Amino acid sequence: MRIIIVSSAPLQAKPTPGLTGEDSLQYRVLGDLIGFPPDLARDADLLLLSGYPIDGRLVGALESCSAGAPHCAPVPVLAAPTPAQVVQLMQAGAADLVASLATADLDALIGRVRERLRRSALPADAVRSLGLVAAKGGDGATCIAANLAAALARCPATRVMAIDLSLPFGDLEIHLSGEQAQHDLADVLAQIERLDASLLDTLAHPVGEQLRVVASPADFQRFIDVRPALVERLLTLAGESYRFVVADLGTGTDPLTLSLLGRFDQLLMVTTPDIASLRRAAKVIRMWQSMGVDMARVGLVVNRVTARPEVPVARFAATLGLPVVREIADEPEGVSESLLEGAPVLVTAPASAFSRAIRRWAADLAGTHPIEESLWTSFKQLWRAA
Ligand SMILES: Nc1ncnc2c1ncn2[C@@H]1O[C@H](COP(=O)(O)OP(=O)(O)OP(=O)(O)O)[C@@H](O)[C@H]1O
Ligand SMILES: [Mg+2]
Image 1 (spheres, rainbow, N blue to C red):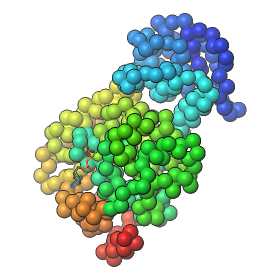
Image 2 (tube, protein in one colour):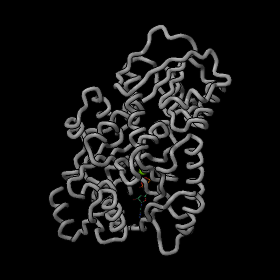
Image 3 (cartoon, protein in one colour):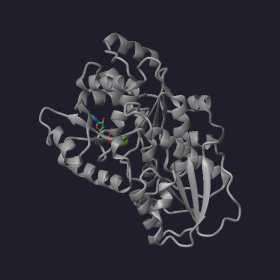
Image 4 (cartoon, rainbow, N blue to C red):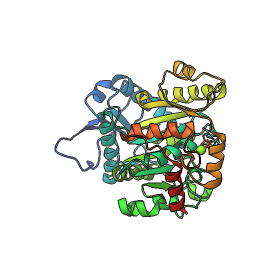
């Protein structure tokens, strides 16, 4: 990876991140960012901007990087930006933010950028991490994320981690399990320094043999401990030890989830086939576009489709310019039974169009044949869970 650190004054001490033989690290001093030369970004995969205040010059430099060198990740070095500033910088094209040039911060950042480069080199079908976002509250992101995770975990030798990042009041686990999770996201993040694959597996809530769930913090006080850098590390570790990571990202517009959008191989916007949802989806997509989110990774899931939808499904693809990855049928009975029983719809209504579509989708992702569930397999699962 080619790294360039641009600073407003010569650095007192040169940073010493862990680099491989194929990496290069260069330094440049630019007293002012007026007329920032885009050529600088063309020669870098990672360009750090250190010692600059958050103003129009920094925003202009980020914009010229993303226009002139889309492959390059421009990253401002800022100790304590406010959430509004984070959103502003990301809209201008910042690929990430880092608090300092200290070795630990730089190493974590370089790890994230390597992951990004790895993902951009992946073939389109190699999706391992999925982030689901609801176009508007109640469109079904949580229900779909939970059931997709459950269906993936039913594919042979496929371990799955479902993470609830719909903060502060996520409810992912109620779609999957009748038991309350003993540990939540805040507990997992509190252990991040010593977290490894086996501790993560122990702390996450087990749902059957192959699915683990990290529930959202149980109360608002604990939500304050959820910081983006820690969640990033959790996502990296989960990606290393599970075949799939499925995250519920809520409405995908808060500073935490905005900072994580680039972490997923695929981003799915869950909409319902109505005008309110289409309008809202268009706004969120415009926002993501302005922030430089790679739209090739974004797809639509039209949920609660009935025989006569208010807006035809094809209109979504045409209006939003994004593919409809899946259509999921309205399944009021199976879904409410699922919530009452604390079991996925795959169990409460295995033969429904909803469950068939979710199983087919999971099988396509995992590269297996869908497991058509008989009442008997569902019963066995219920029995095992009891
Ligand atoms: N395909 C479906 N058929 C019937 N009901 C559904 C379907 N999908 C979701 N629901 C129901 O719609 C309601 C909202 O779903 P869900 O909680 O998944 O939405 P959300 O987008 O996560 O909303 P929130 O903003 O509350 O996080 C729930 O009661 C859910 O069970
Ligand atoms: Mg939700």
